[in-house]
Amino acid sequence: KHFSAAVIPGDGIGPEVMDEGLSLLETICEIHGGISFQTEILPWNCRYYQEHGRMMPVDGLEKLQPFDVILLGAIGAPDVPDHISVWELILPIRRSFHQYVNLRPIKLLRGLESPLRYKGHADLDFVVVRENTEGEYSNMGGRLHAGTPYELAVQNNVFTRFGIERIVRFSYELAMATGKRRLTAATKSNGINHSMPFWDEIVNEISQEYLEIQTQLTHIDALAAFFISRPENFDVVVASNLFGDILTDLGAAAVGGLGLAPSGNINPDKTYPSMFEPIHGSAPDIAGKGIANPIATIWSISMMLDHLGERELGKLILESIEGVLVEGKIRTPDIGGRATTREMGEAIREQMYRR
Ligand code: NAI
Ligand code: MG
Image (cartoon, rainbow, N blue to C red; front, side):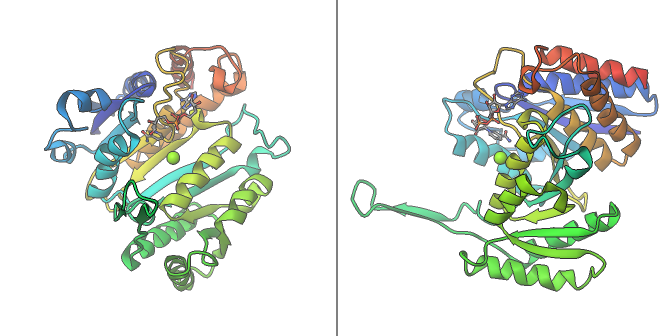
């Protein structure tokens, strides 16, 4: 089978980890003769912004649309405001391509220990489904009275029935398809008294279609605490855009850090390309040193292959990552070793040949 991938390495450690991701993709095609990937590298990042005054060309989205999938490293540089780099590149892609699911597994890989030391591996294996197109990241609102004591800012939350229904239904379907029994929905209807009760009502409505799944609505503050104290309670967690964003960084910390955490921005209807990316950013503090952990990116490629229907290959990648971690010799500094990004990537590719 032949697939096409648009690749946006981005800024900082983005290109460093993406190099390893692309080498891995080559290895996959070598090992599995029946698969090929045509990739095109797109140099859209903060440097591009400084030269062109935009994060991507005017027809950037049209350029991306024909690809089967998009791979993104990370975007962001200290000299370009984050609201520009994120709002002009990542968010337009997520929204225009109706990537309404942001899928983020929280899984402790074999060979790693959680900072929650008393938790076993089986207890740290669930998935967060983050709503990816609306909610708190609405771009609606404004600022008034700058420079006066009455200065104010308003940012509206936008929740639509359509948007909530499709993310909640996706989450139940995911639970069913993966044989999971519990669905937890993040809420805050005690404090946010219009949008969150609306969210709760729709969760309750749809839960009636999935009576074999146990449904729990949990306030986001308590839920954050339970991520640490009772992670074994979760199978599928569904959350609004902001709540899901925060929960998944927290979940990442519980399973070894941002250097390991993958994500997929998925258009389940496959009417547009889906985008896969590590959840971490461009990490200016370690950029250029060659020590960023490429596992988050490589795991994201595993999710990409799952999405493309190549589940065996997705599994092979994840097992190869675990193989390296279990051997324990090669680790980047963020997980307690001294290896470089390249060495970590090479070790994973070697494991793939051995399997
Ligand atoms: P960050 O994720 O870049 O870094 C947070 C901490 O985690 C840093 O100490 C960093 O060294 C460490 N870290 C991250 N990825 C790592 C890896 N692969 N291996 C080892 N250590 C790793 O978040 P931060 O510092 O808040 O943001 C930096 C820039 O990235 C900002 O411009 C921000 O807007 C942008 N950003 C972009 C994202 C994206 O492209 N999707 C997501 C999050 C932030
Ligand atoms: Mg985040």
